Length: 81
Length: 221
Image (tube, rainbow over all chains, first blue to last red; front, side, top):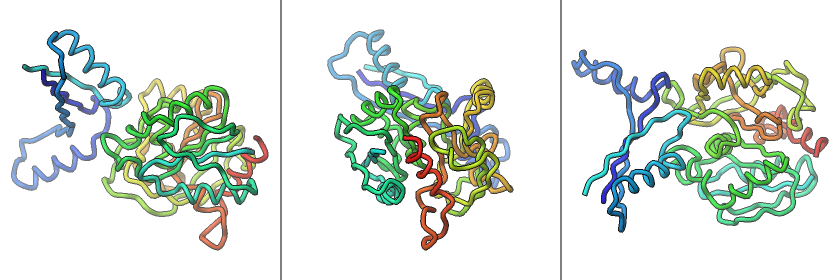
């Protein structure tokens, strides 16, 4: 099974990189782009795991312990395969 | 005072911190590698600045989960004083020993310059040789020093007097909330700050405003 984890900054947490991207998009003529937020995607294989609910619980534990910082970040998990 | 300094792959202020400590204590601290899982019997642990693990994932996040940090956490819970400078501060917030988080500088630029810092409290093992309200000149050198905490957390910090240092005179280099440059834990035995007091302990290399922090530790521990 494969997991894809999206980590994003919480609402209300300043995202200076998102702001810089937004300014650059406006400079390129994409004036409609607003509220740009930058996050990260982490992909991993889960070896020998078949049960989806158990897999999700394990990946959420990984997020809580390491992959995301709950003070500033939210995460979501997608499982496939 | 018996001191230890933790060394991670990518630490680059570990020697500066050791020299500053030795200048105040009269003996070199024990240098402890990140892969070790035990600490010697010490009164103080320093987590130095640098770029531990290349700042991968989040600054300080991988270091916070290294074997030695489990031991540091146990010692801190037992009352051993812990200081984190710059990347060390990032490691301490990632371990949960200090509240809040450190975001990318609001300017998106690496800030490397002197700042002016006010001492918010002299009531700690780290700051007793200062007076509250003293203004110090201490350098910063970081890309991710923008202190963030939610509203409830900020209120708790302010109410409990856990803000240790603030940027003053419009020198906030990173956009941090409330101009916060350094915070204590609730017991004031753990301190993290972005500026580098260890770099200003000798007039020959630019200043002595950081020396009283190390002298405070020697007097207290």
